[in-house]
Amino acid sequence: AEQEQIKAMEQKIVGYKQEYAQLISAVQQIKMEMDQVNAKCGRATKLVDDLSSEKTRWEMSSRGFQEQTATLIGDCLICGAFCTFIGFFDLFMRQQLMHSWRDQLEEASIKQKEDLSVIDYLCKPSERFQWKENALPD
Image (cartoon, rainbow, N blue to C red):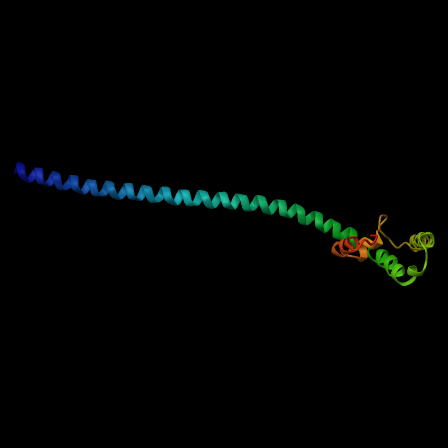
């Protein structure tokens, strides 16, 4: 009878050891899942931070576009007139014409950029760079 009790106890011990091993395995799996979730949360937090800074950049760009559209008509009129009429004249006359055109647009309540550079508006930076490479004024 004692031998049977010892065998029964040994079997229970083996069962408990197996159950303990399964629990340890489950704990390790839960820890791995927690690590994965923490890593995902870290990436998600970084993404949200990056997106919030991107949102700020987009809002600033949007305001810039609104400012550009507010003066688009006047800027295009000035640049179009510049391309059409001003090539023949010397620097002094060009400045006089630009001033006159700006005054006329103001009288007509057509907005324009105060610091409009016709060259910057009409030419790409790469084109101006080529001008400089060829010793031309910009």
